[in-house]
Image (tube, rainbow, N blue to C red):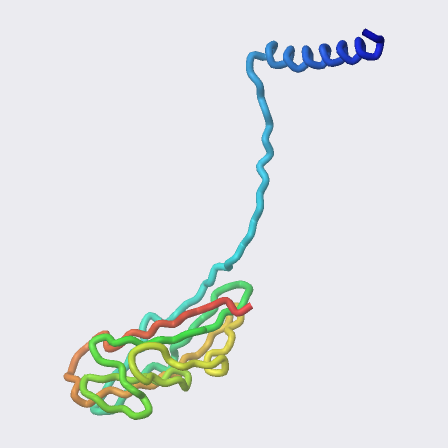
Amino acid sequence: MNRKTISVLLLALVLALSFSTTALAAGSATATVPITLTVANEYRAVNVTLPAFLPVHVINGTVVVADNVGILNNSKSGSIQVTAVSVTDGAYKVGNYDSFTGSRTIALKINGCVTKRSGSMAITPATFPVIDAGSRLQLAYYAKVSSDIPNSTDVNAANVVFTISIAD
């Protein structure tokens, strides 16, 4: 064997003994493992106050609705927007606001958008604009109620579903 080969073998032996000596002497091994964190927020929480209900009263044939109803964006930053509105049957059938007929029927107009039947309403960004953080969108709504509805109190006549989306 030449001198170069012997020195490589000795170096390899010393290196091997140094690794095994540490493990054998301690009887156990401790390792520190870093925690790597990756955050990929694909959504942002929406903090919105919606009306609990849209009251409709019929008093001696006159339909009266609330004038203080709105949607409030409670977020400290970020805008939201109503991207869909649907009205579904409750105790009464949802009718066409523009050509209102029918028995036990109710029809709605919300921010200028009208019901045609039970289901989605056609809305636009102009009628439901972006609501900035800390701002409120006033809801102007009207109702038509068929004359055959008997005297009653707190009847769930129909259901309004607002879909709220992040605007920015």
